[in-house]
Length: 62
Image (cartoon, rainbow, N blue to C red; front, side, top):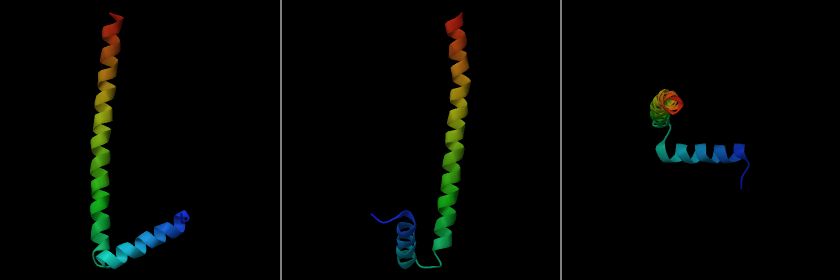
């Protein structure tokens, strides 16, 4: 296996060869927006879970 820095450079060079220099910023922007949406969606799920857990604790105490 290649060390982390070298493997990252190899991946970047292969991506540059496949997609070309004009497409890479668009792909990066799309990947960033996808990750942001995923993070927001999972944050909403985690918030929903926090709301449900105290309600279950209250039911068990009564």
